[in-house]
Image 1 (cartoon, rainbow, N blue to C red):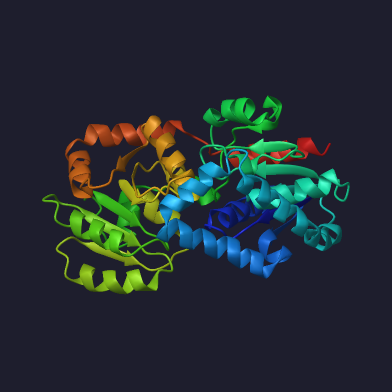
Image 2 (spheres, rainbow, N blue to C red):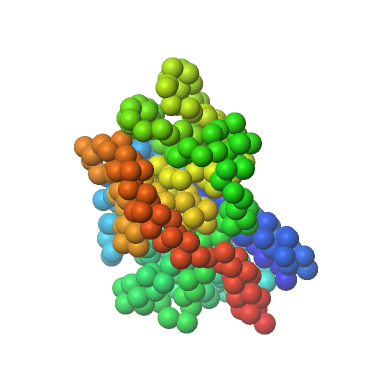
Length: 371
């Protein structure tokens, strides 16, 4: 079987999902051939820069506008009609990759890639099955395509709105979970991991993840939590945010709280598994990796749109708490550390949301689709 996975770099999670599925297939379905392609870069570099750069700029600098666009494209607005036309116009540029690789199934982890393949199927230019993996915790119209043969979704709650609001056939929806690397499910004792990280094995440990979004907010959160009058230690992962890393390097050196500062790592799962609580923005893949690590969350500054939806899902199922505007992060953290029963209940809720067999189910479904 030949599997072509089409992703895009917008937001980062789409590529990570594609790579996780690719790795699982290579490890557990050796007879299959798999290839990951960045669909937007493939069709047009300028379009890729517009979508990926535009997403980052609007989401960080004008989140209100981003939220408006997100909700606007969830209906029958002019913008909602324009984007599919642009994707359709560029879709033929995927044909060289598709014809060269000759996939039996095309898996997409970005909605624009799904639209492009759906258009090619409609025109009879592609006959491969189309499997769409939705990388957030609530559906949105841009993910729904006329010629998708199946949808992998994050949770059971998504099925009803997909059927009622968007007309998706129920039998096409499968709540297998968003693919993440298997290492997130293979946990080790927190104490062992902390010792390896030169942290105290028996001290409550907070993980603060920032990614590329913002400096001022992360600095304020860090300064807030180091003033908590409790024994705790902190791991901070800045991602490839050099400005934030430099700022925190100075601040953490003067901190009275033991802090391990990480610039970039390929082993996020180890830091998640070593921690008691994650403080982060609720991006779809970060959320999924934390849930796989059974790690409760505090989520802040959810971007209106999909991050708001992700945060709502986490709160509804008691796997996370939200830090609302003008609310003290330190006060919420202190309350959780002093009330370990609530923190334990959040961890247990994460454990109940077990999707450790998600990739296996996705691969089995993929095989069933092409028989």
